[in-house]
Length: 124
Length: 139
Figure 1 (tube, each protein chain N blue to C red):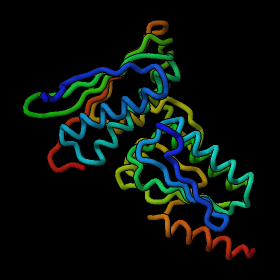
Figure 2 (tube, one colour; figure 1 turned 45 degrees about the horizontal axis):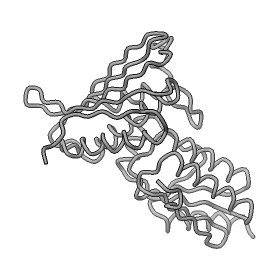
Figure 3 (cartoon, helix red, strand yellow; figure 1 turned 90 degrees about the horizontal axis):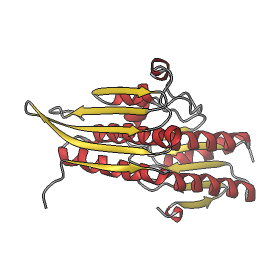
Figure 4 (cartoon, rainbow over the protein chains, first blue to last red; figure 1 turned 180 degrees about the vertical axis):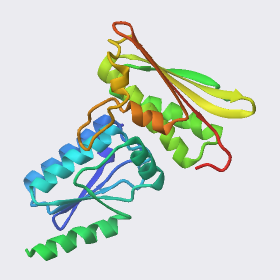
């Protein structure tokens, strides 16, 4: 799979990443690298990872999300995983995967709201 | 085109993990497993394929459709000629911890499936067998 399948968009200092449906390791690693590069260049207040089309969340993906969320957190930002499918949530829980610092939201809109609320409360 | 009843996939690099996932997903869906069960089976298979790459370097996955006493199911076997697991009992108690990435996900894979068998010999290799049966009305 070509890593360019990931879409990374910056919306007012919030990074919106849309993850493709069955990302391989290379794609997941590329995703983290693009997020980190964006964080180096801009003041990123939050990261939204839209996984609404993701059908399998394996340990490598979970580890990478956890790591990325930790990095964002260290820089004062918030990571929100958006749109996790019920089948994925059930399986991940039963398997024993966790997502560290990352929060979750039912969809990307709510995820954006969560980050904006936090930024507003902190005061610019 | 006749439906395949079994197949095998070489597991040599990370790229093969996706091949394993696809083969298992296609079979599970064709057998009629519900969305969540398909996700369970694919996730367990993905982790075991990953174990082969991480601990043995290379190995093989063999899948087959099961048909016993009017029950249908899927069987997925992972086999390698790697170093083997020194303490299977211990390996079966170490799951994934938050961000830790420790363990081989064996207890997790066992929880996701109906049947789980593992055998390993130091210096010879490891074999893990997974089975899941189709239940009427299950997700």
